[in-house]
Image (cartoon, rainbow, N blue to C red; front, top):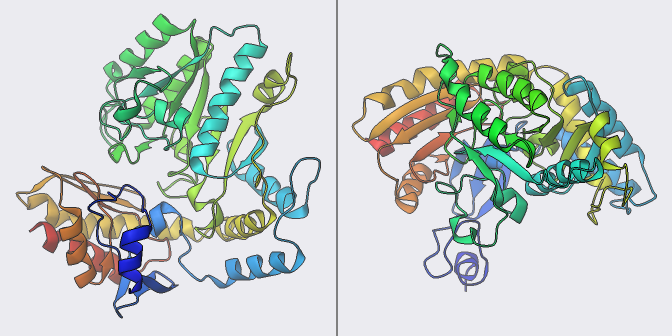
Length: 421
């Protein structure tokens, strides 16, 4: 039995049927922006391994960081122990994130960092003597992960988790932001959120949203004023603001963080994906001093969360190296270049009859089709065209590594055009 056949029978891939699995392609090598398949094809990666590999693959700086840390120690428990990689990483994070965020919880994955953020918000109000504030407000079209608390704040209808609605915590949902990024702000856009905050303030602990770009829930790009107003309203109605920067963090939208477009500081920020440059799983939940102290007032006196691999030294060392590359600032030239190239090379897609919309922000390019695409069929076309793009639903999108050159972006865009034509 060859590898692909064995995989098909025994390995369960994300969002894939066990009875009729989508075709799988075996990768044998990855370097720069290219993936090499076992069958010999070399593909330009348009996905950055689900938004994470912003520096590309097999990067000498990240490789070296992993090797050096491996020679020292790969892991120690974080209960009662600290280590230099965690301290260095935390210093770097605090120098980057919006002013006022200063307590860092080093979690395992994006979904876990959202779980941690929600638990922080709930425990904060419970310890303030307001256990009635136990619900979360979330805009529709949001996506925050696949674990249970994270699923509960994803879009309840258009999301992927409606099957579990009977066992998920019941949250409060607001209409999605309507004013698009780059359009003139419409003041009516914020009114539904304001009305819900006013109506439910007695039971709301937090508002969670993805700043500026709603990711897997629809790849929607909205006006920064919505985020600015959301911050003001949370202050007004005594509700914590959680920003899920897992997909938008570290330069992807053209700013270091999505919330930098609105120049706001959240109460809690979730980071992941690009944190380690796509090398291994790691995320972080960062909060203000007020939240941290509030969580630890009253019983039980500590924050009730402690993953086994929290603060993993190997992940911390690679994340620190990744942040050092970001600190060098090349992304500030690379991302605007990618944005310009995406705008130019994706523009012809807008004229295709199958296409409903084309939108670009930073190093994110989205072609939305009128009907859902056949993933197996379109993926085969992409591999033939020498690119790796993983669409879902009606969204054919790319978020290439920041090191991508113009010819890479042109190849990705041309492959989308020919596929949809």
